[in-house]
Every structure is written in C-alpha cells, then in structure tokens.
Length: 277
Length: 290
Picture (cartoon, rainbow over the protein chains, first blue to last red):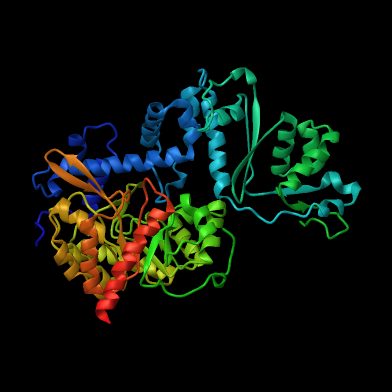
C-alpha cells in the first residue's frame, strides 16, 4: 500500500479527528466534514463510522461523571443528568487520560445554574459527592494511639493541634444535604427532599471497606473543620462555639474512628517542642 | 498509596496460562476465594491513587497472584507530548505493585489539550510508526523496563495508511524494542469491520515479540445495511474468536492469555469459566508440541 502524496500529516489527522469528536451539538456530517476524506469509504459512510467514536467519547465522559455523582443522578433523573453532563463536558472537557478527575469542577459549574431555584441544594449535594470521591482515593495513615493525648501536659493542651486523616473531608450546607444524600441512595424510598430540615453538615472519611459519612451538629462540625484546618484545640473550641463538656465525646469519636494521625505540640513544649507525635 | 517495598510481593514472570481482568466489583470475592486463575490484570489508571479501598484490595490480592498493569490513558501515539504527570503515576503504580508485565495501546488519545479517553486509531504510515516507536522508547526509558503494545480494534481505516497493521506493529517493535500484546478479539473485530485478513495478521505479526494475548467479547451493531462490531468487552468470547485464538497459539506456542470483561461485568465464576476454556486451548497446544 502507498499513501497518497497529498495525505495529511499525523498531526493534521489527529487535529481533524479531534474536531470531529468535540463538535458538541453539530450533526455528525458537519462534525466529520474535515475527516471524511481521510477515511476509506467501503460502502458504510465515514460519518457513521466516526459516530462510534463520538458516542464513545461522550459515553466515557458521562460514565465517569455518573460514577462520581450517582446520588445526584438518582435525584435529578437520567435525562436531566445526561443534559448536565453534555453541557459540562462542552465547558470542561477531560484534561487527563485518567477519567477519575473529570468531575472536579462539576459542583462549581452547577452552582450558578441552580442558584436561587428550588434546586439550589443540588450544587451542595455535588460538593458532598466530590468530597466522597476525594476521600475514596486519599491515603489513610496509621491512627494515633489515644494515650498520646493523655501524655500531654494539661497546661499546654489548648495549644495542641491535631493532624487528621488525609481522607477526611468536611462539607457544610444551608440545605439538608445529608438527607438528600441518604434519600438519593438506590435503596431509598424516593420521597422528595424536605428543605424544611434546614442546614446540615457532613464529615466524610474512608476506611478499608469504603466511605463513612457522619452528620454532625453545627458546633461539632465547626470544631472538626477548625481542627482539620490547623487550629489548636483551644482556638478550635472557641471559634466553633463548642461547649467544653462536649469535647470528650467529640475527641472519643475522632480517636475511636482512627481519624487523628498525629499531635502538633506547641513550640515551647518540654518534650522537644514544635514537633508532632 | 504508601511506599511499599516491591519485594513485599512475589516476583516472577506471568505464566503461559490464563488470567482474568480484575475489576473492583470482584475485589472482595477474589480476596475471599482466591479463584483458580494463574494471574490477574488491572487497568493501571484505577490504581493511581494515594490510598483507598481499591488500592488496599489490590495490595492484598497481589500477594497471591502475578500481576499485569494495563494502561488505557497514555495515548502513546498522540502528536502532542506525553502527559508527564500521567506517566509519573504509571511509574509510581509500577514501583508499588511490581507487575510482571506493563502494557499500553497502539493508539492516540489527546489533542488540543483535550483527552478523549478512548483508544483512537493511528494511520499505518511510516511517520506514525516512527512517532509511536519514539514515544514507546520514551516510556520505556522513563519506566526503566520494556512495555507491551496492544493492537486496537478500529471502526474505520485511514486512506493514508501505507502499511498493513501487522507490518506497522512489527516496525514499532523493531524500532522501540517493545513487546506485543496481541488482542485476538480486536483482530477479529477489524476483520469484520474493515475487511482485514485475520489469518495474514496472525501469520505476519512478529511472533517472538508476542508476550500476552487478550480475549474478549464484542457486540454487534446494525448500522444501515451493515453490521459493525463494537469492542465493548461485555460478553463471552465468541466461537470465531476462540478459533482464531487456537490458530494464533498454533503459530506462537503457549502465551499468557487474559480474559477481559469490562462492561456488564458478570459474576467472577463466569470469568473463571472463560479462563478455563483458554487454559484448555493452551494445554492442547502444549500437548501438540510435546
């Protein structure tokens, strides 16, 4: 076989093929117009052959988005989700050979589209599902022995910081996203979301067997978020407005679930100072 | 993914027996039952991460099975530069799981900064062969090891192609030093979709380079007056592909063979049953050679 002397270069071919794949809502004949001459026509129109690849590209992207946002898809229905996926892909096409990350900007893309409507909570549900996606692939380090906290001198306890698991995420919302998430599970009864349930806050972690979601009261959530953000214990308590009497229970949960991986001791600590244990 | 010394896992080559593609739906089952298959293959990109239950499951499974890492996202033949971040993640997965084989595809996948996340065909030209070979060399240099390159299923042929597909692959092998992963289902799909001569493909491929075979199912789509076979890895291997596989083994001798099943993934036992069929073919070839 010999190639024609006027054959396009490899770069030109890939450019034309790429145009055919990304041609959004154009008809397949329009999309393929630059590539059709480069395809052997053996009786089956090149456009119909290229359509297989157009379908694949759309399906791969949409499939990845569905795997990241199954609850949102369940809540809005297949047709609406497919429409979201098409529009989102046009604005945020895949930038990696690893499809895992294509949904990274979906929540922020969705937010202005649903803002001010009765569906505004969907954007926060998307944030929660993205937090789940991140937690599912993040490291889980060895948990700190709770006895380490008992060894800290009481007078410096308020200055101690906590390193939390890399797989821990916090998501708060003005909407009942915990209820939305639970209501969107495959086994749920499908009752409409009661927005009257008000703001909800969720901590997402991942263990050996998968995701674990905790719905926390607002003050406990603020405390965990502050601790996770690097605030020392005393500052976190104060900024969260958490009653000190609730602290043992929250700490028991954090340590009991293995969510604390190290303590950050204040710089002037007698035990070496400024380090972690 | 933590830093784990590769010596944690058993070493050695993939045996010339049947393995199965491991999907996350079967992680628990494989951990619990250790099904009787000789080896496993996973998509490299599914284990790029710092941690999580999937990586943890593969670590446990890897202690009991030889492993092959099969990439689907590098887009080796793309004219745009290789994604160095992606490539670094491949290397990290290779260092972590210490696979016996590492493979990718003879395809392209990205242009204009956009990834299409599909295995897009290359024209079979001198230019494309040289380009693909140079990219394979880059990857092999970066990973410090040989990779296998897999032939594609295609839904059209380029009028610019000046080489047969098997001569194209032979050129890439010769110029890069890579091995070949021969997908027999893809040969069959191309023979039906493009009129490619499957027997000549089997006869023409550089046999010494073939270190792995893939078998999978496809589906049949009616397009106008024609059938177009879609390589969806969503069903059992068809009779015609089993026959072509036997002819490939007759030429190549026993080669590690993988049952791929990526969509509508069935119960693990179905995959194990398909692997038994492949093992029976391999046994017959050994018996003939004895």
